[in-house]
Amino acid sequence: MFQKILAVAWFSLALVGTSPAQHKHEMDQKVDMSRAPLLKGVGEINHPVSTKNPMAQKFFNQGIALIYAFNHLEAERAFVQAQKLDPKLAMAWWGQALALAPNINDPMTPDRAE
Image 1 (tube, helix red, strand yellow):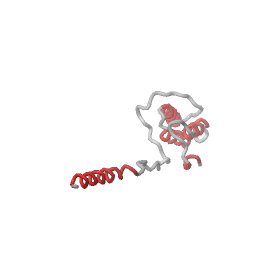
Image 2 (cartoon, one colour):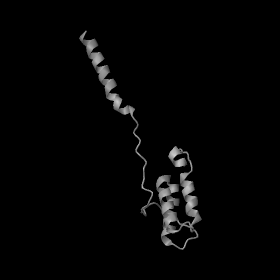
Image 3 (cartoon, helix red, strand yellow):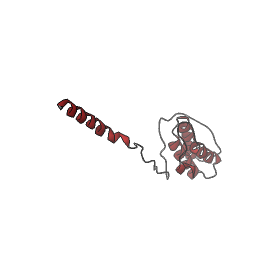
Image 4 (cartoon, helix red, strand yellow):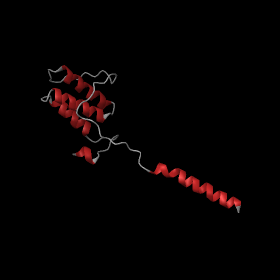
């Protein structure tokens, strides 16, 4: 009888122990898009575009490097920063569209589809 009670107790503890693992572990993806940092060590990409603003060129290059690194969220932030520095830089708008497009590693979510 004692063995049955012990077995039920262990089984109950095993069930209770796994309950915290049943909730979602996703982080809130609210990111400040108002400004992006100029990151170091993301690669030496130089894709010349039609801007006279050297900082816009740096942020565009960073966005391209981050796209290649599959960091689409940071790439979007870099392209948005390039747009702020040179609103007529069409390639920065193209880069943002590329970063927002669905890809195999990051499926489209409803908030990003807007």
